[in-house]
Length: 296
Picture 1: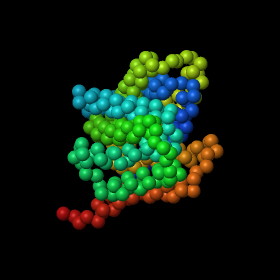
Picture 2: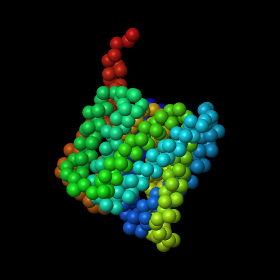
Picture 3: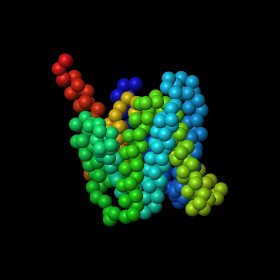
Picture 4: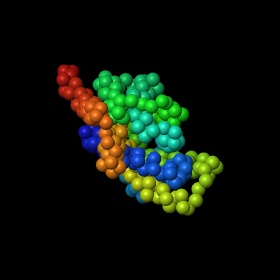
């Protein structure tokens, strides 16, 4: 798979997540956040599991204790990000949440620098700033007073950045994106189930009312989109992946306009242009500079 193909897969994942954002919000009218997380990722685990066994037959690298640890850590990061985002949606607006979540586009290269001691290509920094500015303009160019939900969503963005970084590292070592997906989904489902059973009420009628959202987000936003993410990250960097994945805000706004009749603010079109520009520069500039380098 080429880097271009990998980044196109990341765009597809972002489009699916953009559609799932509406489902995440509406589902909580019927069901608590932890039950929703538990059920969506249980569905995702079951959807991916058959393909894990097919992948295992062709695996070239045996799963070591280090690999298992990375799988679990990625799952814990995924659970933490999903939980803080879902709880945050109870006390913040969708506009604020979509913008603040997009801050992972800045946190990913910071993690690479300070924890992995890897300096990303210089174009990542202006690309990240353009993507964040694009998300901000897409939200209308303003944020209401910060709430506890906003602060939780900042924490969520940090956990998404950790998940993106861990997923890239793990898949590059193991070559088993489906195994990683299944384990991180299962870890997230188990953690959420343990909390939901202790603190949230549940009934069959509540599950039935939220079933369409659970199935969509479980099969597509969780199962398919996260699998596309970890497959694509074998052939691109975490910093580039973060910028392409941040386009979920763009797709979310577009689908909300199409499906819910919401309108995009005038500044949103400038935001869209900035986000597309960011994706283009991080895709084209590294290859262009490599070609310009003199042969040794």
